[in-house]
Length: 382
Image (cartoon, rainbow, N blue to C red; front, side):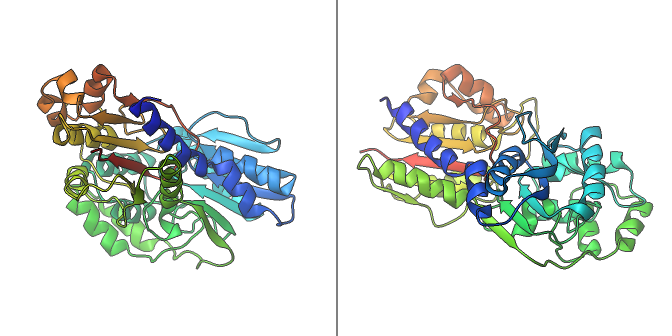
């Protein structure tokens, strides 16, 4: 197998380990069915299939980002992403209607945009504008979620304190951060949300600020809240796959976070120790004519550092969707820059995917049906 094929097989082992159908089936085995469920997020379809396998029969609502077969009795709504639109607002309305009859919730990343309903006094278009501004600014996910949850009737426990099973895409965070916690209430901090919106240059109408302060405090968390898998689950599986072919490997002890360039510099400056796997989610503020993608951007930055060496760097969005790049990520090596030439313009305009498509380094999977953040792999060869 080629080096690229070997690395791709290791990454696939990570994806297989966070298959939402398998993880949900394992988590719900022993629980009595039938059940009415609300499933929200990029892994919602697989989680519904796993719930049906464990419980025998389910009905309810599934909100996701791609069309895929769902169990009989489940209504599938495809929401808008990364910015909520009409389909997302319809999904939010349906979720709020369904919540009083639901027995459990299945939550995964991406639901913050896919399923939305503004609080009273806030226009849906304003909510969409805020989402777009925060995404383009590369704001940290905890700050993004705090702002979004204070504009939403769904987020921050809006669906009530249902027993909840979470496939987490947010590195090391409490489960209430995933999809902004539709069944898990977090602290009500409208003043901080207002401060953050102004910091990111969002023009905040007085009527919106008043609505945020007026919104009621949500239910406290109660019952089962279980994280059934996250990025470390995938990273551990990658390490197992690497060591099965007699190579030294380990999971980096720090979650990926902060600006993407800083994270690349930090990891590549560490002493070489075979294969190192890192997981989490960095931030990227996109400007210029490019389509972004924090993983393709990370890969191209890394390619400039490892040029003309024997090292390999891979970066993968586990949901298969790396921003607006059209790819899932990339695998680069010491020859990437030799094949593609000066990458300066592509880096400056956040158009790394175009560059890496030309060099043959892109990973293109389409939606994977799971979502546990990003996986990065550094293979330092002698």
